[in-house]
Length: 445
Ligand SMILES: Cc1cc2nc3c(=O)[nH]c(=O)nc-3n(C[C@H](O)[C@H](O)[C@H](O)COP(=O)(O)OP(=O)(O)OC[C@H]3O[C@@H](n4cnc5c(N)ncnc54)[C@H](O)[C@@H]3O)c2cc1C
Image (cartoon, rainbow, N blue to C red; front, side, top):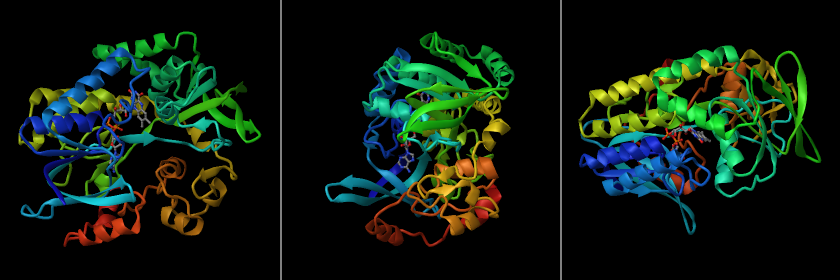
């Protein structure tokens, strides 16, 4: 058992900042992430191809983290966690880390915990979305950061959200021939959002940088993919629609994602309340469970600046400190997040693309037609195995929620698949008082 005053789960920008801020205040901090090193999504692995500002921000955050004395443990995936049940007993969590024999489960005890687990992409099923050559937009970006070659390949970027621009710019910098960006949100929704940025010059600059990087690349609003077709099992073209007409775009790769969904599983497992699908926090990033803070994307999809300021607040909060100036900045970022959500809300057409034979749960090969007629998640899982693959519904869950309105019914440990030996350790560390999951989920819904 490793003991720490503060454990931070997730070493993206939010978790890195939180860990550094808490350690600078004299707390003994352990920072865990399932990736080998810190950085999270935006600062993942290499920063080659990133713009200068992004590179400098990562280097600065990393240097500060290393100076702070926080202990960084990469390759640790947290699969179970319990909040403190009384002031005299520590909270515990279990993580799986790879070793020479496969993997080992390790246990941590802490006084305070900061959840900084980030977000993932939302995928919506449409005919052909499971073809090789169709990838998540952020997923393809991550592959390219890891060395996947896209030079000279025709790439169409489609879906919704600001991430599409970041990905398109990144792919172009790596030599891809980006044939266009298809954004499902209409111009009439995006224009007020863009106008509202006047008070935030940094975000305007970021947008302008992407536009400059994508000079010559068509950016179509009110446009979405309706089908992907291939020959010999590989993507050849994508059919786009603007609601009035449809046309085909021949391409080698489709980078597609419909904004982001927060990774709230660990927070829900620990008993934290949600509001509107996000972890409910107060102005000090404290969740509804004492001693459990939450920062970054699980509290609202708001981007890098929000992640950094929230991390700062939670780090100070662990040392019993606060800053009115930081809280004001976080409030402004929250307002930005709700404008973002409104601007990139899904249009009804993209929720009607799946045909009866379109696969929804690709891990268990469950077509859309077989979900129709079920009363909800539990019924559908029992009858079809939808959401019961190794990703535990992380991909199809948000899609099914968007398509059929079924909210998740339970979050149970382990939140990631683990070997039996890890479950034995989990059994030993059960606290006396069980979390009342079903009651909490009802309240969160
Ligand atoms: C695929 C993807 C690509 C993105 N690319 C960009 C981009 O290019 N530009 C941009 O501006 N924004 C990008 N974003 C948005 C970006 O993530 C946010 O703007 C912001 O950086 C979020 O920071 P964060 O610290 O909250 O989360 P993240 O950066 O997502 O960090 C969360 C970390 O927690 C780890 N984690 C989660 N659960 C566990 C667990 N149980 N155990 C251990 N570790 C765990 C994750 O592996 C991750 O490293 C991307 C988002 C996604 C999902």
